[in-house]
Image (tube, one colour):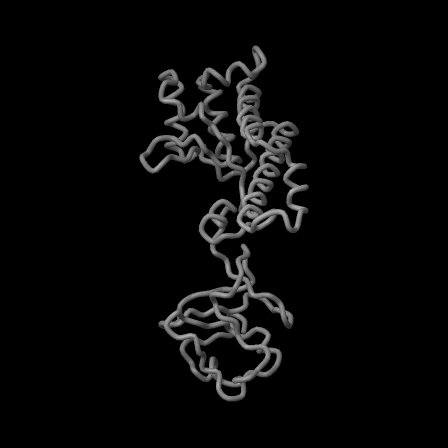
Length: 264
């Protein structure tokens, strides 16, 4: 059943016997308090019953819409689904790190994933006062993530926000001391920032004990890895791919973010 066809709290809609096409788009309903559904005798032994909500896999964006209808959790097709198509829910636009730690799986080439960059120089409390002030200003704009206690984290998502944060430090002549050495003498602020940002990416990649090729070879081994080790290796391979793509993008086009959503 499509979203626009659903009439909430009408038993005739949920419990009536559907014809074959609607059955392919039937709402998957279920609650933890009551798994049996009001299907009627005609559907008691159907080979294509509605799947329980808890059995739906994750995809973002999903092919369904979901919500509460009274005390029931209802899932409706957001598009026409062919017979036997898998019904997906979205657990949210989450990166693979959270999907792995909270749900125990990894989505290859996920559009909501991002590389995680180790930026120790941005979390150094002994940095010069001008650098600390510039880092704090970038964090106040939402360009840098903080730890639970409020300190700027040494681990930051790769992408436009971190690019802009490093660029703001370069424009204020406040790059951490260890990063100024990677910039070419008399280079522009943007070139200095690109060099510093690339140094963060390269250092993060260099800290891994294996190469991308090593990971790919290990993943091809169907029997030599425990399931948990395979998932961890998949996540690590995805991280390396994301960081390498970010490094290549900066090398090709510079650091200036193209997104209009970055705070000024």
